[in-house]
Image (cartoon, rainbow, N blue to C red; front, side):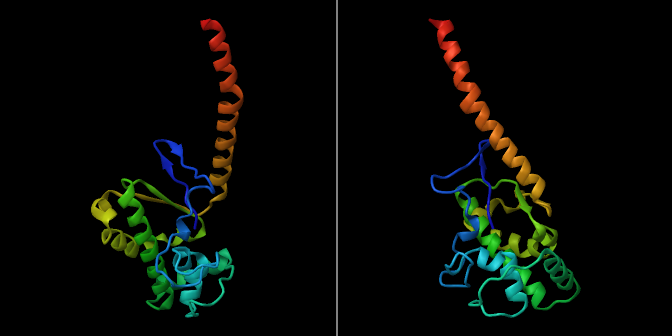
Length: 188
């Protein structure tokens, strides 16, 4: 579970990564095994493999496995049909996401959130627990103003983001320095 964070209209980037490793924030210290090798990450409860692992009643110590999009769509359909372990797995995912977002919103004002990827199509299963968890955090004081949007197909967004990033680099690093140099000559 990644995160793109836009602050004051600019994409936030850290010094060592993209700056948005939301999925590897700790939800429960010493908890479920994450695919990063640590335990208790948000992703270890809310990633596709974590939802699958929980729904199949596998141990939290079970190695994370890749789960196909079709399997996740079928799992969500079953969760909508019956109140069983499948629905509970999505509830747990919503709780982990909600506590993580609530902690984030304690640091910054709540902002619109976009859920992207195949599991965004199951947001209806995640949202109630997510909102309840946010409401229990310091960042939840404005929980009613938080808006969520979903986009199950992340590829167009990834392409657009890459294009914008590349064009911004070209604009700032190639064209802008030349404009500044010419402007300096005109002033002298």
